Length: 81
Figure 1 (cartoon, rainbow, N blue to C red):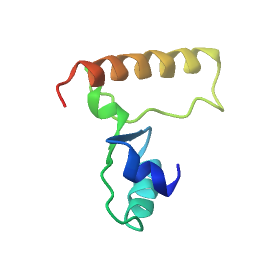
Figure 2 (figure 1 turned 45 degrees about the horizontal axis):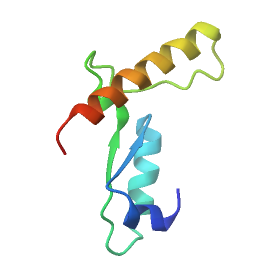
Figure 3 (figure 1 turned 180 degrees about the vertical axis):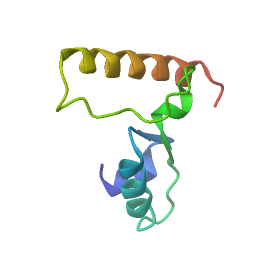
């Protein structure tokens, strides 16, 4: 994520609170930040706020994260912004 991204995009969505904290800190260094920085899980109809990194898990963990991301993205796109 570059400084220009904070000025170019309306939304920057992330997976967990560590990402959220890092992005918000970085956005504070950008003049005219227009991006709304949120957890993608905020849009999850199943209310799973955090999307866990499946890297150290098994194949099923990757499938779970994929399904969660698809649910969240659909809900995000269906929401009137």
